[in-house]
Image (cartoon, rainbow, N blue to C red; front, side, top):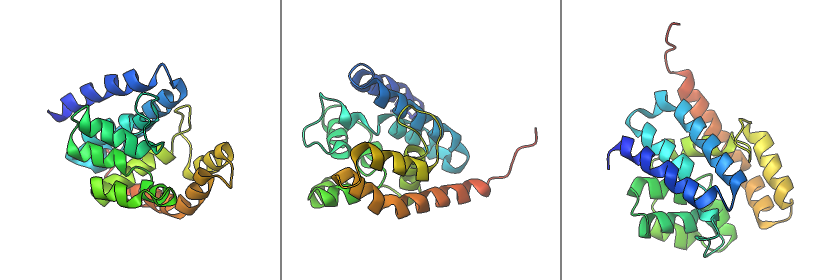
Length: 190
């Protein structure tokens, strides 16, 4: 599948899984993909892969796919086993936004990492950046507000609330690394 074909395949798949049952999650996924498009200058030939992973990163929330209740694993398994997705895309979805820390909290880290090796660190950073700089409604935000929103939505003592606070330093570091790479891109004259 060509990388252009990857994007053309990813959007309708994500929409079919999220738009009707989870319209807010679909709006978020579209916003994450929009952030991914903005990273094209630092992603090079992986830009289309990142945009496809961004729009698909939360498909594991779809009621049709939720098997374990851990959306990165459920989404990655569906993309691998049913959708026959690109292996790199599947690994990005499986490990998006510090998923290993949530997997650890759920007692599923060995399962996640045994099935899905991690993708290149700069791509993991990029997807985390896109996800954590997008509100649940798809609008731009910053990672501090996003972490606060997640902790507030789930509750500070919940598994997700605890995980997201534990992941916050890595989320901020990922964002800093992405912004650092963006800062090195020469600006085009207008």
